[in-house]
Image (cartoon, rainbow, N blue to C red; front, side):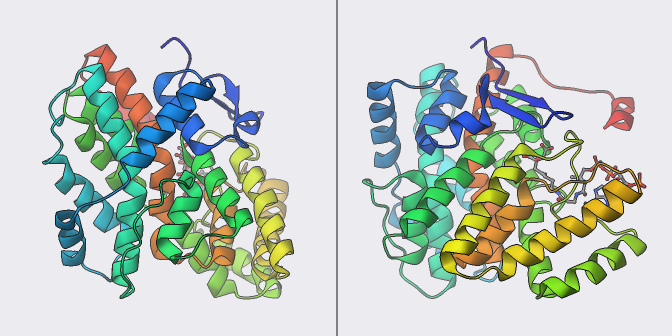
Length: 355
Ligand code: SDX
């Protein structure tokens, strides 16, 4: 695979997966973007049909997996259950220790397909409801919403969920991808690498920020309270969740797309409340941190995605696992690349000073 898995220009706010700009990928099915990431090229019509058919056929979970889900603490973030269950199912994959390209591709398809089902089954169980079996006729996004809500999703919500998975799919050497790569670099199996990614993604400085954004929106409750909230945070030198980025020193292009999507959703729902709170937070952060203090702190991927979940009535406990559902294709693409290198990642301690 010759193309870069990911390209980011943090000064211009450009993001590409395998040399294709994110704005060109956003209207494709998630399956096509997943194929692009792990295979290196966009699929043709026939290739996409075959890949989707394989993914959709691998969505189911069996009774033993449901037993494990029921044994999980049902009052925690879905990420905790997800990492436990992914670790559990690895033991029954006949390809677990087959690190050939074919073996890894079979595991990749199973993992990408089954992770949304685990998250949805945990969510339904935790809420005292029967799990909803996956529907192979639905797209990745529509099927996930169907499995958590138990009804065929509204087409706009399904479209936005599909786009969320695409925007979340890949972001170069972020902390969770780095974790996955380190695990793969030891020639450990793909499940272990994905579990490493899950464990790292959940931290509030990384994917966990989405849930924190939702809590912040609830706490602020009304656009008039946003200014006071932002000023207080800055005074106490606390981080405002959903803002700032190690690489972007301008608007995160994913944040910009999420902002447009959340506005569209707010307008269609005829309820601007969450969007207006978010926009007020953004305006105040830009004025106080960017304009007055010259710090490049802009909304990142986790800010307006949190707004979208408020409108879709998705609770904070699911927010990070939704990020994980999208990101798994990116982790796997990096693991495949790492397996080809057959070289362990072993930095020296002094290199951490640069991180
Ligand atoms: C993701 O790496 C990736 O690509 C990650 C990701 C992906 O797709 O994988 O994009 C996903 O993790 C998005 C980030 C989600 N996290 C948050 O929203 C949490 C809030 N953000 C910050 O904690 C922070 O901006 C980070 C962790 C995202 C980036 O941290 P950096 O680059 O190490 O920045 P820093 O903590 O060293 O801060 C530099 C300065 C500091 O001020 P000074 O001490 O220099 O005066 O910027 C300030 C910080 O206080 N600052 C913020 C801020 N983020 C940075 N001030 C207020 N609010 C913020 N959010």
